[in-house]
Image 1: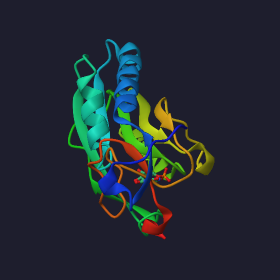
Image 2: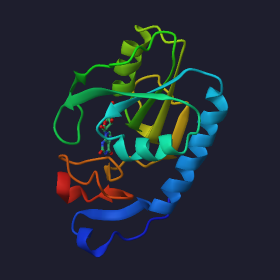
Image 3: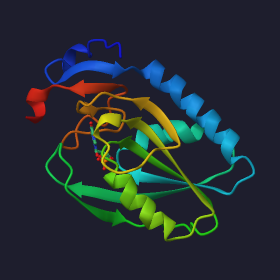
Image 4: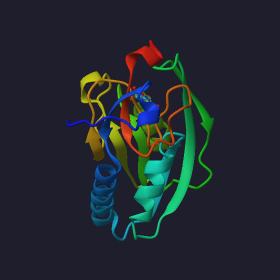
Length: 186
Ligand code: XMP
């Protein structure tokens, strides 16, 4: 993956820009086109996980011209800032998922534990179909047998921030995806 230096004001914290704004925008348009093709004439309910999906979700749904409903689930991992711990649901769905064609959107598929827990919970609501879309995945760290139907980018096993992803709740507003300097989190 070709990288570029981060903007001057972030050089002490961010090692490099892994995926820039233009590359993200182009890939989001492709994902939206794939989703449109697969969900045509379906009763699309987009279920996004809070909070890391927000910028990605906003860009993705504005590139989808099909009618859709949008809802959120809250799920938090109470570990330290870079290693996941126990999963706790902090917000439940408001809309009915039964007999809907659900597209579950998450920020990053890492070990797969988050998606495993959320998919089990959604399956119990008996949607007609359930597909998953993630902005990023780290293939090397998967411990659950999970694959996403739509994947934006595969990233190396390094801590990434920006475009929704945080470290200690910071960096979510960066318009690019960058690699955090290890000295920031170690
Ligand atoms: P699992 O391991 O459950 O992880 O697939 C999914 C959740 O872990 C967080 N995560 C990250 N967050 N940079 C982040 O900002 C990362 O490199 C990273 N890796 C995992 C994230 O909240 C995701 O939903």
